[in-house]
Amino acid sequence: MKLSDIAQVIRSKNAGPRRLTLDLMFASDADYRRVVQSPALTTERIGSLYGLPAHDVTVIPYPVGRAIKIVLARPIMAGDPGDRDVYGAQQHAPLLGIEI
Amino acid sequence: MSASGRILDEIRRTRRPMRFLGASGQLGYGIPTPAFNAGLARKPDLIGCDMGSIDIGPTYLGKGEMATAPAATRRDLRKALLGARSIDVPLVIGSAGSAGAAPHLDATLAIIREIARTEGLHFRLGVLRADLSRDMLRASVRAGAVKGIDDMLALTEEEVNEAAHIVGQMGMGPFRRALSEDIDVLIAGRACDTAIFASLPTMLGFPTGLSVHMAKIIECASLCCLPGGRDSILATLDEEQRRATPVSVAAHSLYEQADPYTVYEPEGRLDLSAADYAAVDDRRCRVTGAMWHDSTDPCVKIEGARKLGERAVLLAGAADPRFIAQHREILPAVATVVRDLVCEDAPEDYTLRFRVYGVDGVRMAAPPNEPPPGEVFVMGECIAPTAERAAEVVRTLKQYLLHHGYAGRLSTAGNLAFPFTPPEVSLGPAYRFNVYHLLRTPDPDGLFPLEVETL
Image (tube, rainbow over all chains, first blue to last red; front, side, top):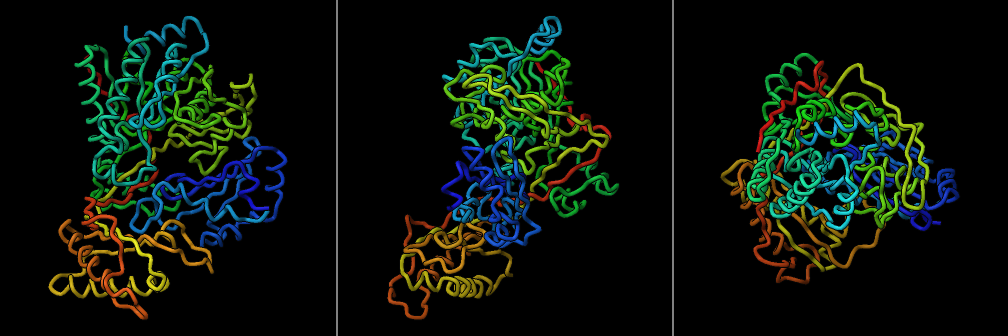
């Protein structure tokens, strides 16, 4: 099953101009557990989708919000020349197709 | 007595719970009237609005301009001001004018004064400024008291000199000082969004952890609800159409934060690791367990933007599959042709970049083996020392990209589709954040002077 078939929310945004934060939110505890226990969300795997080394990726489970947070170091600071997404609101797309 | 004095007196006397109306998470984009009026009818003790963010990028801070339209900004400020005065409670606005530096704050104050004049309102106005002294910053850089945030390069005196504006994010201290001066309306420059709501209850002995957590939840108005929205939100009673459920409220701690369990503020750190969210009923949520740890080493987040030059862009589409297939060779080849022409009698004093929408204009890395799109949108972006130079580069680019001959070209009349002409647009000055640092200072509140005037 693809992540986009199981998550209720998959979103991205800046957390300050040097970090991107991606939130995966789930409708039920069962869905949350299924994804959080899945081996699909490794820092290596996520990094490869963004062209980033694994050490620029952090994955934080947040059970009280039935959510998983992913934090990426931005290769280009928000608003610097060459940036593609000043707010960082469209960087979730590479996650949608992850197989869980 | 003015509104802040009245509320402080009343709560000290009665020790009753307080209510906070988060009118807008981004003032200037419209405050939906029904929810705002429903909130007013429940007699909140304070109305708060956040007006800015660093998310909008460096240009507004650098240029000293608001992100919101003047008419919409005035409409929202009028609604919030009339609402607060009608029930005589403090109106607190943070990060005035999008970026909270002097030109943003002064433009906001000009609108406030004009509304007061037009509506015949009289009140005590408190103003907190957020601009930081260059002398103090240079001395702090020399003393090693400035540290980059998230691997930002070390700050130098040269960057301090070159920034168009540098602001500090004020915390609760300056707001408390202002609210203790018996004011009705408080307009602050760049500020932590939590300080808008948490300053008043913490003056009255409410726990700091809970107060800051409440502020964090309502600072984006009803974005913490289901469905998320821009309606106003009341922190103790929310009987709007939206539902604040335990999961929707807990999940808001994720929003625009790298760490859902910790929120750093100038005075300390909000610790949500033991926070608990319980449904009161179908549409209300009780939040407990937030802890607060005072900082022993107070720091203020500082932000600055430096001008890079003048920006101009070329906007064009293409639908020829051969052009699309070869664009990675065509674009640099045309950039070289342009350089040879515009640098014949001038230095190479500009940068030229492309985004190819449909391919990798948005994503940081396109997946391998993705089939080519049927059409693409090409944006050429030039940043040059002057607007004339940037316009010269993108106009030359237009002509030579339009007529560039590439291998196998069939469409010899032109490579580009222009949605309108001129397809070259001058966008004004371009900025980058050159200050995004923490300033260690023994007296963070002292950086933000208070002015009080009576209108």
